[in-house]
Amino acid sequence: MMPHHPITMARLFLLLLLLFAVYPCHGVAQPIAREGASPLPWVTRQVSAPGVEFHTFESRLAKTTVSFHIYKPAAYNAEPQRRFPVLYWLHGTGGGLPGIAPLSRLFDDAIRAGKIPPMLIVFANGLATSMWCDSKDGAVPMESLVITELVPHVDASFRTIGSRRGRLIEGFSMGGYGAARLGFTYPDLFGAVSILAGGPLDLEFAGPRAMGNPREREYILRTFGSDLDYFKAQSPIRIAERHADAIRGAVRVRIVVGTRDATYPLNAAYSEHLTALHIPHTFESVPSVAHDTPALLNELGDNNWAFYRAVFADAAPRESAASPQHSR
Image (cartoon, rainbow, N blue to C red; front, top):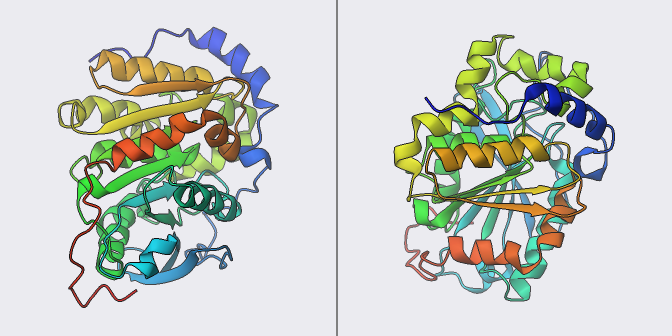
């Protein structure tokens, strides 16, 4: 098996611990909900934003009702026979509600300006610290819920292009970690993976979030049952190694991170790891941007929008939507 990266951990710790103090998530520190408590917040409050709807479905795995938000472009209602590609957005730690309104506005503006094709955006509910994986104790079946319940529910309920060419999975921070995990594990479902300032992208869970915030580290470790071997097995590092042949040449991959982001060294190292595995991808470092989603996407400029155009270039712009189940 190939080594993960050449960066010396001792040097890395010194740099990352200094950087940690200056990067809040989305520019605002997010409280961490304790997922060891009951009941889990599977149904969130509703976010009000143009084009955004609140929906729920009954989850067999979670044994309860689960919520999500979905953005619909204006073309969705204006062109009732058209099917649309889907961006699955995975949020960072602390929950994703604060990011839904600004992100949906950002994408809506780009769609209206013709910078990207109209698309649906599913804002999944990943709880506070699920890491977008199935917890070791089975209490939070997040990966299984997204893959076997949420994606099929969205395809059955909305006019989607229900194939991998019409699906992109993307996320920020914990969501970037999740996008790599799910996108690389299920290349038959997702045609593209976008990792934005992903983390924790190391095998010892000793990066900036863990070392700088022991309380958060404790909560996240609960997902893995405080079992480092389980954590390593769930890591995008190991997943890329296991699925390299299926990913290589089949999945469009990008990694984006700001140069002032404390996760920068580990994202750069992960890019090196993908290169060593001969997995084609792009790595974009954005100067002077910290751990801030809107700033990261805005500073990328047209390079950002070009990515979405390329991802969905092969997705048919129009397909018959005759099936009666697509009622929304």
